[in-house]
Image (cartoon, rainbow over all chains, first blue to last red; front, side, top):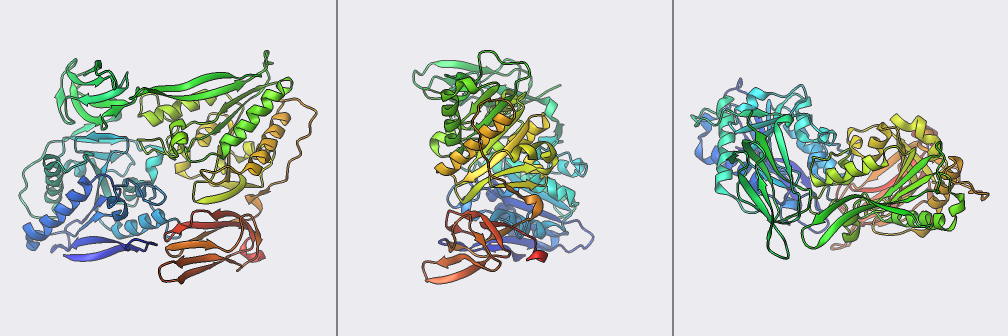
Length: 310
Length: 318
């Protein structure tokens, strides 16, 4: 394994931020290669943890002879945000994942994006570990943009329950996944639950999915347990459940739970008077894919999304 | 004249409060069928307050001159009303930049519902003006930014607004998610004003833009008054180039010039210094002569932080 410097940035008052990649060179020149990107934002640690555990697995548990293709893991791109529990770049609050393909003469986060993008461009596959942008936590799933260059087959190798296959929003055309696909990599994102503390069960699912991918793609020689035969879900299949009242939000089911129509999935309690002012019932049979992630909820906020069973 | 106040969006908040996004409408009792409607919007970013002053001045003028009104004037002072009240640029809690969430949808997450409500409400206006300050990092002279794709329709209107500079820029995909792009696509000629600096009011700029808006409304027949609103001739980016100066190193930026100065090529712009060692890390010089129309206000910089923009003639002429 080689540690390579992806970028270095000085600060007025903090120690320099050095972003490092862990490069595992494969023994088979014909084997495909992959780059895995961990935390581009702060305030959530599962992408960081998962990427760092992948480094540990490849370095200490697998055995270098079993690594066939090149693997680059960059666990964190945004140490400055992670260290102070900020979500975005701490000075100007810009999102690095909205700066691709980047620009080396531009603003700070455009430069970070540019240097990261340069480092990962020659890989056959790309996996980005990220969290949802919409104040929701979720089951671990694959987000795959429809760009005309996406590869559903390799996204299935992750073995996660759901692949959300959808058109990108206009703002997502500046994300890493979109640009990486345009530049020729089979890139997808693993969307991680947004949890304040590491949940070992979620972390295990993500770790297994990465190992599944490496194994099925022929990048490592390893007999992984098979994951799920992923269900490909499009936007039309997602039922949105908005909150008709505000108050204290208490979900009674977790993301990833299969529910039946009319089953109780949560409630809202009046914030000052304590009475239950609304009970959420599943509007259809399906699987809860994501849940609003704060205890206090606004009226009309999206409380749940459910992937319907046809 | 008291305007008619309408809530265009409301959401009960968790603890004893309601989020309201409001519009005030000024209109004569009888509006002619051919009368035009203008919408003036501010506070899409919660830390940008210059538009609040302009809208106040406009509303005050309309209250004083009800006899002048021929069309409909809709004002939306605080689109991100929670953000304006809490000095938060994005939509609080969600950390979403509302001007990157258009056109939104009724069934999407809350910030997208808010922008959807605004776009639906403004739709049908003949003209819209979206007033931004710069963010907290930069100070800007009053300027209009228009997308090249819509410039044929919007440039003549921009010239009426008494601003100093009109910046016509190429389409960028991200800009498709903005209010102005959405409204221009829907047939409302929409102009974006940038001026001043975040979290502050620049009274002279407020009065300058008010004059421009009144001039535009007069020319469009929305107000009829014998007063002549004399406006300045803006320079436009069609006849020159915009040069960016980004920080080559981190440190504390100490400018050597005042905002809005006319400068010469290779003139000293300022230094990036290190207070701990007392060293000057970098000295910055103008790559071209022209008007220093953007200058950094917030001194802490990283490599890449924008320090200044100059509008001037291209290299060959300098």
